[in-house]
Length: 72
Image 1: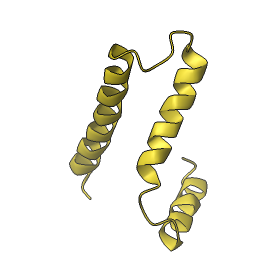
Image 2: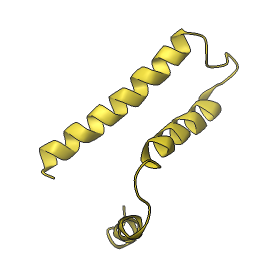
Image 3: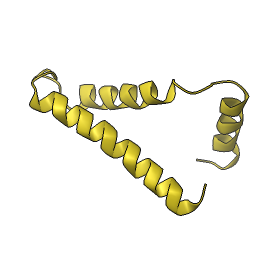
Image 4: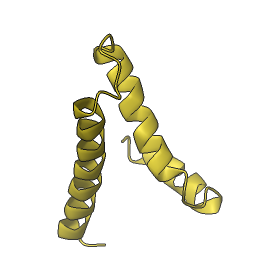
């Protein structure tokens, strides 16, 4: 994937998560007492939910190795 495609993918994914959460906030689905702590947890969970759809075998091990080797 070229850099421009990577950037577009990341931007689209982040925008999709943002728009969905923004709608839930506007619709009153997110509790009013949630502050930065719960919202951070929710963001983490939403991105995890988006990634669990994909196969987590050899490719994920290679990804985790890249994180270590490339100090990401």
